[in-house]
Amino acid sequence: MAKDSLTVTDNRTGRSYEMPINQGAVRAIDFREIKVDEKDFGLLVYDPGFTNTASCRSAITRIDGEAGILEYRGYPIEQLAEKSTYLETAYLLIHGELPTQRQMDDWREEIKFHTYLHENAKKFMEGFQYDAHPMGMLVGTVAGMSTFYRDSKAVMDPASRHDQIVRLIAKMPTIAAFAYRHNQGKPYVYPDNSLSYPGNFLSMLWKMSEPKYEPDPVLQRAMDVLWILHADHEQNCSTNAMRSVGSAHVDPYSATAAAAAGLYGPRHGGANEEVINMLLRIGNKGAIPEFLKGVRAGDERLIGFGHRVYKSYDPRARIIKQTADEVFDLVGHNQLLDIALELEHIALEDEYFIEHKLYPNVDFYSGIIYQALGFPVGMFPVLFAIPRTSGWLAQWVEMLTDEDQRIARPRQIFQGSGTRDYQPIEKRR
Image (cartoon, rainbow, N blue to C red):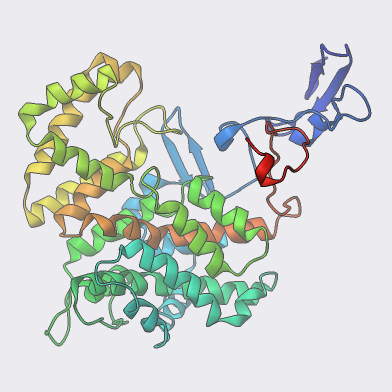
């Protein structure tokens, strides 16, 4: 009779071990029972990059990479992008269910109440060089916020956790906008809480001398959709950083700064910046065939295509392409979009890219939209960090309330020198 277990035979000793299978996984700690003798530490599982290691159980985001499915709390990303707003999606991620009208009204008011930064926090921003990378400013400012909210260290107190969640989601656009204005040499614009969440962000970015900034509804909706698509994405690098640092029970500002630092890298949140650099390097549509020839030969890298998780078309890319069309209808086409469209068209019909399952991902179009709106490439990961904050915080709460979780402490396979005696410097070779 079939059993939900795995039998492993150690050919070194001839002994067999039976391990229970639960939800398609075996516990790595069970392999520690496999030993040559009693002095043996036990068998380790070696998995660089956690390519096949589940570090947690989660009920937040489900991805089926083969089928191209992304769901938040069971809701398909296509439905949320079409019908929801970012703030409503953030509520869903944090609380597990979509809000009622009253819950949504209360949530929106809570967020609005906390959009302002402490005046002393502005001094963090003012202390940076005028040309400092905006992501560096964001990471530093978020980390510094832990010194303003000492109650944030009570991470096992649900009421305190809620306060910090609201503060972080509310203040992240303000920090991002201040970083942008700092780079521009323009005065900071305070929040306008009569506007929507994305509308307020656009106001803090672009308001000048007018008494009130009126954000374009197409751009507001574009930001909402982009933020919904980027709100969470399972156990990626930055989320893993949030959980790993958070497992030490540090305050959420420090953990969020660590997650944002992970997002800072070009292999993660900076990927859409790399897409722009690639398109600029291609230069024109006529150069695409030669560029793709270089990709096949391994001399060039096709950025914005393929994904470690998705083995078919990234569902977010389909949605964002429609958003790109709406934005470009408003601001006009540019050469980069023409190159991107032609590059996608050729790649999707090329046997090499089909065979290697290299389909456009969300980074391919998001960078083009941000570039068309006038954002410098340094702002791209900042625009990513704003919505991902809600996903990080949802993962943080889930980690803290999971009784299985321990402080993150991976093992290593040591391959350095054996024990040796210290030699005085005059005897060393």
